[in-house]
Length: 150
Image (cartoon, rainbow, N blue to C red):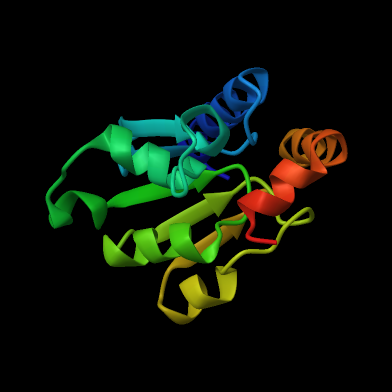
């Protein structure tokens, strides 16, 4: 992983921890330009805002605000967990060419769809991301199952 990858994943992990401390699902995200500028950051807010769609990645995109398509095409989306179909769809819609995830041991989202659509998908195999998710799933399985539509 590059320096920017480490930065992006660290910011995403900070966001995930913030979500956990707030009682929400600990998934964080960060949108970084190719020169390392943070355009957006966010965490899953489904519990905190009683939202159906504010996953970590969509929350991050919301904080990034309205950007020209040319900007998204030069960014990397960082997420602490394998992105679900909704969040993968958002990455595809905005033509984000690269997604770096913290881990996919606790959940496998739509990685195949991203890859088949030409997106570079990188798994960092980050133990801290995995341990935080495992702790949350153990402590709040009903909230986790709701988050993934089960």
